[in-house]
Image (cartoon, rainbow, N blue to C red):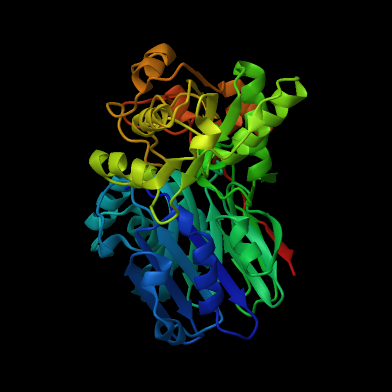
Length: 480
């Protein structure tokens, strides 16, 4: 079960956490539109509300009033495989002998099946096919024998893959990031408490202040009274595996991830794109919305070089159509492109146009965009992409489709150019991506653009030694 989701956890001093959690989920809605949920704890018992649909549809005003307590976690889900139904919606709750547990997961385990079998043999009954339930059962089992920190540490030594988690054990909220930091997670300070969230945009929504990213392999335990937090570096890995695609596509441009403002990273990627493959044209225009920052950086670099190219909005977006990227069938994706984008003829007619997008996955959207612009009177249409060719699937939680569906898996750049009927096509190099992110290639997950993964995955090659990271001694750093 691949999960590309948003998670949040909040502990406050003396007010209910439900409403701030609800606002946080709105801020993370771009990370998942399938289901939304909140679990809170009032010091005596756990309260849960999890529904299918967008945040605004999943909660009625009365639902939030039932979610009592100053501590809670939330989740928005976007499934990329497995069941698309309520049994996999999160946070996942479980009650057991030593209390209650709620768990929100962003990422994808590569050994969930193996652990599920072991737990099933020990008598655990599963209600879903998601790997979140596997983590919850394993952690619940460990909590019967260990304190909270050691129980989490033991679970981390067993689960392998990509995960950012917010967990609630009774009224204690905690956050965990996998040892290679594949998925984002950060800590924020509020006026009367603390928050853990997938992206800093959620902290901004609550008028909070970003403290820092949760470090790879770190456990953060929020004090139930909202006065501080403790952190434990449970696992130390030699390299990270930050997902470069978070910066290219998935994250909000106003979020700070791994100390980098996403918007500025995208602008820098656009500048690199001009340096590597700039072409003279009358107008540069973004494919809204994700191409906007790339196009801005590209046009700025072009004009610094004396190009004189105009930066213009040539495609208008219908904001009431969901992301074509995450629509389940090809037919829906094709229909949605024309529903979603309409050219502004005065920006396009009789002119040579360069359009900038973040990626080409299947090629459907790009082909239709080129055709839309030609129909609107463009003389030439050049396509520039702010990421390398996607040649392999993502096993870490982004719906990159199978190799059969990926246009770049078996086609050269020239063949793709011909298929999308553009006058020219260029992608950004992998080196330019690592340069713009300020990371070495060894510290990024580039599996979808290299076919070599930072984790052991059946039938795939690995680009590094993926022996399990060393589990270090449990030492605490208190933050009050």
